[in-house]
Image (cartoon, rainbow, N blue to C red; front, side, top):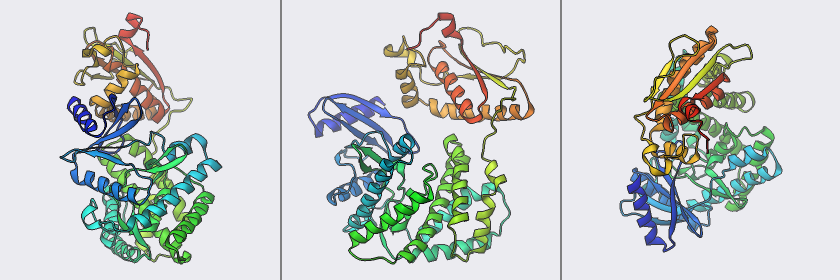
Length: 483
């Protein structure tokens, strides 16, 4: 951590003489790249660190190219010699999805979606001019038949096959081949963003800005607009989807300077909606079912309901019998319910007692007299208490929380804890048990164990709605006042 901060400071000093006030790591989401925010007295910047040099090069080259085309992408200010670190323009932390969640389906948010689609059309078409796909693209240079087929197989292996549903594999693969061939013959191919969704559209001063297009390639115009309008988390109503799609086609025609065949565009668009929904389910399956990341597991029912809505109201025009049969099979209620966590009700007797404690004292006794439960040792996590700035603080203070989330393996540790405890909580709810004890210990019972206990309490409350009782043993003994 310290060495990266130093490297950022050195790289920034070569770009600007403004003194750096702070360099803070930004919490990671699904990316393996690490982001830092650099603060000076005048403004802020983003430093990005990643060991995938080809990915870094793709983002840097695309960004510089698109900037020359007046696209709303970040300026690249400095890149280190190894191309593992670069400094870029900061658009803040507020995404279009944040705006949608905050304001709802309002004219203001609708206008932001329109802005996004107009800027998208410009980036796709004008950005395509002079773009070196062969040397700049991260993976495939074009989203053609093989790339489409790859997405379909990604869905098959990482999601469909985990369900263990009966289907004819040879017929399904044949349908995949046909579908991929048909879609590869799309009329309009320009730059394809690949992951154009409201999380990757930042809003600053009511203007839109784009990030995370390093996976882009040449491909159908329809893929990106399908990604945005059918993002499961956004849950846009059909009225918005239809109106925004019409507006996007207007923008495309205006930039191209010629009319498009709207009927063919819409037929092809529906195919790309389906491709995108398959790719997303494949990603949810890989991240959730294989990597066991809770956020992606929780997203699976939303993705399946999104697919069901598409199949009921928009899927038509394709002679793909086995593929269509499988799709209808996976959106049945009993399949979706597999991924919906059991929820406690008002009659559920289970109470989960969560403790933090110091190993210098005894492990807390089970108040219910069952003599069991979980005891997790947090001492393998880097101790904030060894740092002078944190010695008078606890795991409930923001500075300590940021440290544990950003500078230690606490997030990975807790993901494993959640997996274990979830099994018991779900089983106990089903069997009508009334108590489960979970304790977290660390050296002083002040930082790591306190943070972990609170994190588990939030997780179980959000996922199961179960009754929680939290006790911080050491803090109660010391009558600690939280900051």
